[in-house]
Length: 401
Image 1 (cartoon, rainbow, N blue to C red):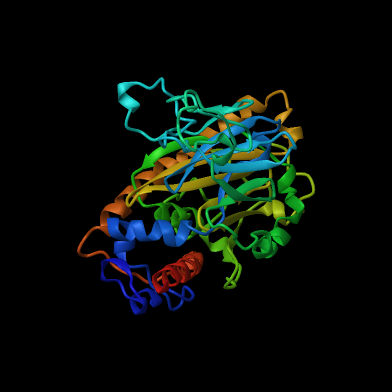
Image 2 (cartoon, rainbow, N blue to C red):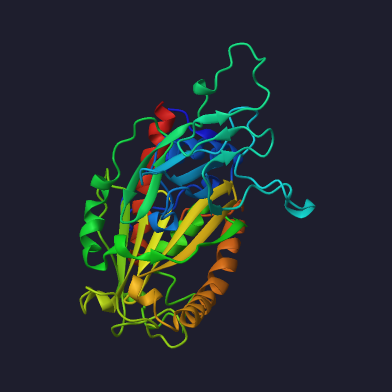
């Protein structure tokens, strides 16, 4: 079994198990370029990756342009109402066909940002090759003198697609195992939230956040820091109210609960929910927050009045792009004061981000130190040992191949 950077399977095994006996992953996995290249294939090469919500593309021709693990992709609603995902790389000279050609010097070297729109076809800006909504080449100027060239032979590579609770997932593997059966336990927990009927606000994306993608996952999921780093602003949901479900090998969902002191708490200076409660939720569900990871990189939180989702996409060994958005029932979005109340909710969450971001940047710095530890876990961060176990399965399988 060959692992990069001199890592061994035995060393990784120390991070597997529960909070009681596992230790942190080797620091190298958070910054080493060689390991990052290995990890992109090991973790992202055959796993279901979230690329958006189905309500973001409601009509035929609506599309999203996203990048996942370095791959530019198009997510499109087709004329038969199905959703397709295909490569955005033109099959002529590899131009990303959804990249803007009207870019400034300042952003010339940046990857294409998430874009959305509606179209009847996709035209490469470079040489005007044109593809239909299925990815079939339907136009190629001045190619009639090229021996053996036929438009019928050219198509944008298509990827597998699966919908779950309104989220759109894709997979780079040619014949991946279905996702939904591995999320049954989470489905049961979310039954009353009616997630598929919720609608998302437009995601905000922060490019190249300066720390490894796993640090973001860990910070979001563990509740040990809530009453410490967020002392004062997280008091409505203290760390002492944390609990996690058992991890079952073969699943891809890890999740837990943070009990609140009173029903209908909120991540804002009032500590109170700002919107009406989610229809169908019980009083017990209104007195807790659900934090969930659909591995590798879809994060979700469910509170009494809304939900929120994050997508974490690695852009380098020590950087990632972070997309964030809220989910609401349609009845909430239609409220006359929805826009102003949403701004207040976002401002409240910013208080947490102002503490989390510099902390995570400092953690990234510490991971590069010669004194970086492989520390033990508290029971309030038990999900980290679960995430380690899931990752190690992927690392060992890739190394064995």
